[in-house]
Length: 343
Image (cartoon, rainbow, N blue to C red; front, side, top):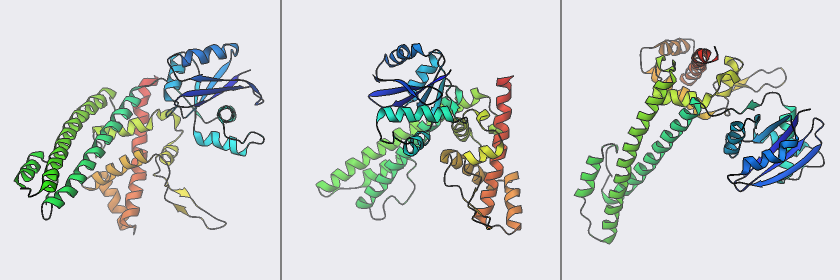
């Protein structure tokens, strides 16, 4: 009989609860988050020969523990927090929120569900996901510094910079030309120089990040870059966010995951659909970038968009239809890229 061990991970500690096939609690333990956390959990679970670990948010707060268990040869399942919360809230008798009840809910959710994803050791897709996230964070930091510099220049110079802050040399020349007349002006000038230095540093980090991503995408041997509008950064985001493509049973499942497929909102005899506000928004954003890029070139995507416009669709509706079509194209490429690895 397989024993399901649910884990409620936290920053300072982890609570584990073991249940049998009838959801009866066999034992529970709480271990401190430290270098011996995995060894202590395995020693505690040694009596359960046939065991499966269910870690809540195995790609979030429980990532490190889940990876350590997999590396130790354990079978681990990722349980989304919403699944565990439903079990706890709808369960009778143990709806109070505490760590043991949360861990039990995680175990029950994993025991009764057949569509949860098994946790595997990090592969190249996780590397690309990490690199693309770092690149996105750097871009946001640069944009934040640029906005602050623009606002500060408006307090120093009538009309502000009057141009996009891209070349730091031009910005520094503008700041140097400013002649402060009081202490406030001098402080504004000094802070503006610091912001310009920050922007220059982010430019260098972004260039290095792009080079790392290009190298990693080349090493992945992906065919995504053959699609019009897909560059290394977009390809890295798609591969990283998609993960193991085998977890998607069809192109429709993949389109639902990336939110390019509309969701049904029917009632009675009235059948209608609306935009999907859920799904993986990073993946949806990447597909949107590809669609807009294809519209700027003489591509198959542009021809498809023009056909939809000729059918009476609005511009937004045509772009949505194009994104749905691009989702199918991306899915086919990801499936084709994964086949040599499984053969």
